[in-house]
Length: 605
Ligand code: AGP
Image (cartoon, rainbow, N blue to C red; front, side, top):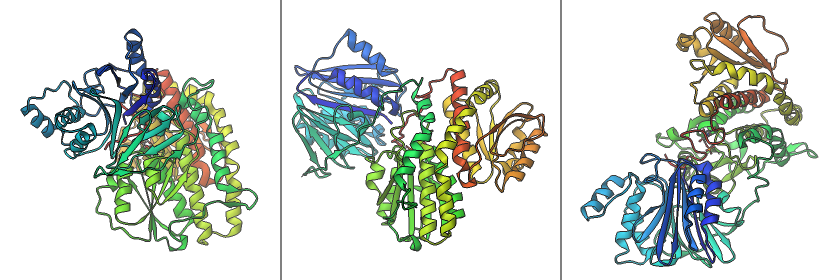
């Protein structure tokens, strides 16, 4: 969740480092810094706050040098301030780090006993001083290698050396690290996105590997410091990614492009001529699949929750779901006939990647549903189903969530068909309904004006509840998460049927309660739960696809999304909740694309 960049060039690098850090700010943005090497001097510049602050510092006091490293931070050890910002430099080296060194306290004590002085509260500084120590008797690569053997925990590193003015050393364990190739300069970065504006030729380090860059060469080394070769990928060009166009922020762009991203995804996975779904190379023969386990974090976990309802409805496969940070520590009974599916927008979430690694070690078949096909999780899976949503920059996930849902639905439908769990007529009907989705999404956006008015009712409320049954329950969770992470207001998603078992005590006069109630088999039950809330003074915001109006004074707002096949209603019901969270956050003047305390890709535990 921090961003790293390194550039070895035949020309000054600080401007390109700054531009790359701006692209990496979605990974973390509470402080920033860079260090360049010029005439065997390390020029370190740092700031608390955004990269713009660092740019102002450099404008007043430029940092020369054709080699350098940069960093944007999401604090793990030490408050966000200039001293704790990266790089962390000694008189011999400068280091940028993404990850957590779990034994930093004991290493710090050892180094202090040897007379080393620490300036910061960070775990990273132990790396700086260990490399400095080992440089006494070793060349840079060897000094870094010796340092890594002392470290417990995760790291992606970029290191420059005062007395070696043409190299950058990188290393990776648990946090992603990529390198980029160009003419007369080479790059190191947390992910390919930071490098794409400079090159589309990318290689990825795997855990335990090191690299050494100069402006003309990149060498790779394995965990035993033996030279190895790495595949060079030509990565896709992100069309107009850095351009918000006429939108005020990335999140609004990403909300309103969902009709087109879903359409693009459907085009990728469905064949309108053959009237079939283009998913074939299952890692397990579909009829042999004993159980599917779906694993993710945050919003990605919510998509897993929805998919459980679909798989149970459309197939005879047993389905489990789990939060990755829980799954990775369970005593799992692995079964080779189980298919383990990992959902992750970034494909770099540490808990999800760790859960995947455990499955790989237990030799079971894995599938990942990701938005970044070059990501660690995608490259580690037996089978990858991309969501084709295009880069999602807003920290709060919107189009990626709908992309995850549509791919999970398409997979469920295909499994159902190839297993013979549904007949061809039903399959064809479901396929036809799928192609109505982009237009229905567009029509759902027409609710925005009403939602803008609704948003005002949340500003002074003492929290809010989001309720739903069946596949609307995970959508309630997702709506509450969006409101929390964008507006910093308390919000809770709950199964509507569970309110009477305790949470009803929270209902007080005027408390906003969003009820998600499509006209499905749960509708009447959800109405009863709504009446229970109204009877206790709750202010109801009713989201449905039912034409029939509800007669009650306490229905403060009734939003009607277009009617579509019940199985697909979760995708439409999500959109008003995205817009609600967005408009409440706008009214509160919150940072829409970079909410406080968060990061787009959580690459630490
Ligand atoms: C989504 O709005 C959140 N930013 C967060 O919950 C996110 O979904 C979670 O961190 C998982 O990220 P991933 O999909 O990249 O693995």
